[in-house]
Length: 214
Image (cartoon, rainbow, N blue to C red; front, side, top):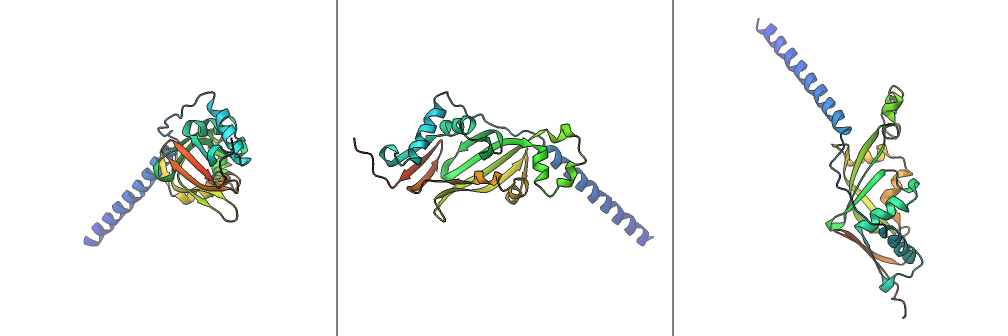
């Protein structure tokens, strides 16, 4: 009798564990399709052209005073209106500049692209096309650091990643984005850039060039 009760108890525990696992998986899947609370990044009609001029001056080695300061509004305007879509795989991208070099990037990409670049690619063949076209939110919290090898670049190291409202390990980013899309985590810089500092609401780029003569 005791053995029978023990067997019943183990069966109940196993079924409960399986039920919790299924429920937890279902909850996580539901959260991946939920939109996060995205705070819009407002910018005006002049922010994009102004950012473009600053970037062109930087590329040509003619920054005023040897320093380029890009505001958060200018960065978002440039990405939205002047950046080649191939260089920004996320649609409706919102970029937030935080303290201590933190840059948060939020945007959408089709579920089809998310699945085909991941180990779950086989699932895509079994889903309706209208599901695959559905946009999924991807949020990447990065910390910016400048590297000089093999050439100056701003590296954005992923610290936190979320799909929808479901947080996932940062390594997942390399599983769901193709190598070309991962270029957004490495931004090439002109050779005369000395430092890049990210503060709340702005990016400060300092070069080794002396200020132009007046």
